[in-house]
Length: 410
Ligand SMILES: Cc1cc2nc3c(=O)[nH]c(=O)nc-3n(C[C@H](O)[C@H](O)[C@H](O)COP(=O)(O)OP(=O)(O)OC[C@H]3O[C@@H](n4cnc5c(N)ncnc54)[C@H](O)[C@@H]3O)c2cc1C
Image 1 (tube, protein in one colour):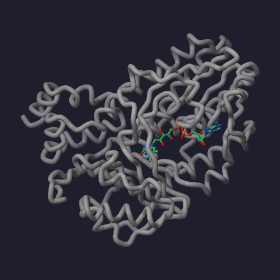
Image 2 (cartoon, rainbow, N blue to C red):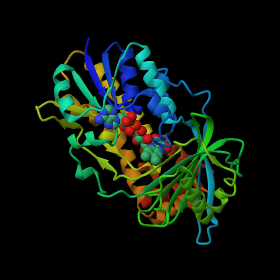
Image 3 (cartoon, helix red, strand yellow):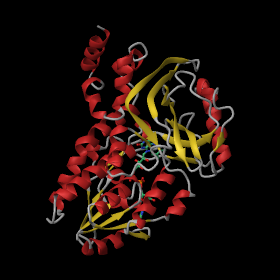
Image 4 (tube, protein in one colour):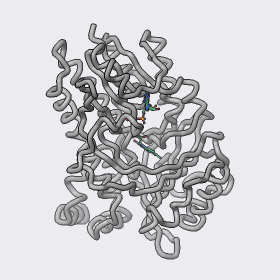
């Protein structure tokens, strides 16, 4: 039986470990935290996942929380004008629903399932020296440890990483008590509020440790008026600041947030990171190779809510590549080809996400504005979050955008 080590128990590592286990591999999963520590710890993401990524979980029968988590059926966009009024406001319908299950719930639950099914779970923060040893005792070592220290083994790919600095300051608060969206309250939706030159406020329903809740997520341009969460340690101060900024920049969202309270003491998160694509093969001091997974190799800014989706897609692509490879050695050529298989989808996510971090060109402003009058445009934009490859067809190139708008308006 082939022996595989998975380092890091997040979306990609757990999905891979559970998938490999189902295929009869002898899997060891190394996590720097126990399931209980994860469950009772701090939130890690907003983790909104769209249809394709959710389907990979269903394919492995890992959709344990699908019936409890709110079904997100739409994606709305508002743009704030100079007087903090809404100059654009629409909601597109998703073909398949999206869901956000708090990673504290999901990762803790999946980790326990992995152990109950006989998987070897090791609680240990792996260091490069550990991996040096394990690369000799396992057929394959997969590093799915997110944006932590182990990324130092994977060289940054400058040709695929246009930014060297973080492009947004992130601040998340999980709350109970948010009022319904005034428009179409009959279905749940992600709300993307764009405040030109300042940043974005995302609001979405989630399923957390205390049941249904909503997430208030500010993405601030560094150095701007939203970049004020650094050093805020007290969760209630974090929430007060979040609400203050909502009142100032997105009063229509503040109006339904006046009675909110934090879900729990771990319900806030702030930080920032530079979007980075890396060489997928990590070189160990002893000469061995390890394969990087998901955020380790492609870490995009969460502005487009793609990281967990990409982690699910990466895990699905790697699982198929491992199974198809049978008993052959997992050499560097295979690692490169396996990453390329993932990059076929990840490249579109990366291009679109990096574009959304920059000030929008005129043809993009036109598209976003036109979606208010043309529901098919709103729907197509919303469904691009599930399959960002579609943006190639109508979003980046002004001629294609204009031709598309002409075809829909006609
Ligand atoms: C504020 C914010 C909002 C986001 N919103 C969304 C969203 O709405 N939609 C979306 O799709 N994505 C979103 N993302 C991105 C998404 O959360 C990540 O891209 C995704 O979780 C990456 O999965 P992963 O498996 O690569 O890594 P992770 O989920 O980061 O998991 C890595 C795991 O490895 C562990 N680990 C680290 N170092 C070691 C070590 N040395 N040894 C052992 N274990 C280790 C960590 O503790 C962690 O459990 C968001 C991210 C942030 C920060």
